[in-house]
View 1 (cartoon, one colour):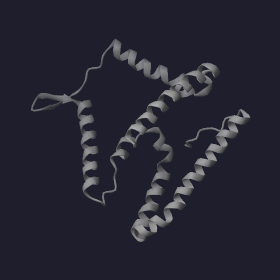
View 2 (cartoon, rainbow, N blue to C red):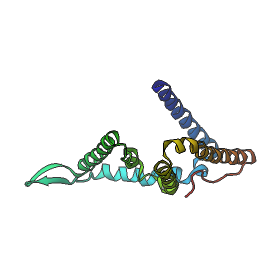
View 3 (tube, helix red, strand yellow):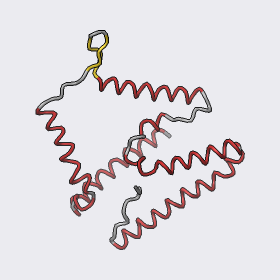
View 4 (cartoon, helix red, strand yellow):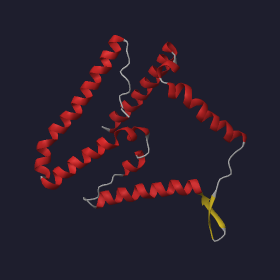
Length: 175
């Protein structure tokens, strides 16, 4: 199963990269996505050029008057420690509610648009499991999966309709 998932990921990456590049050349990348084609390159590449011209002086953590490690490395180690701790707590205690993947994606752009929906889903699951138990959870699960499938079907319908009429349907991720 892992091999199939890996093959699908590699194939999906290749097809999406090819599609993005060819549609960018055919229709003009600036007409497709202003953020990735117009605003983002000067911002990030300008930062890279500035770092090459004058490399930053990294701050170091000090202990007893000695430079111990760079602050950025300390941040990475702290994040890895938090994620590892959450993973260990999740594996050890069934009641532990936090998943380490939540720590990784908590500041991503997509979460700003869907955090409340994720919270409502978690709250609904918590209520069902707390007051109804696993039996009620198994009975109500098809309803919630149907809601997700229904939303996906509606989004697919509007995307196909937009492609057929040549209009844009806006962003799939609201917010």
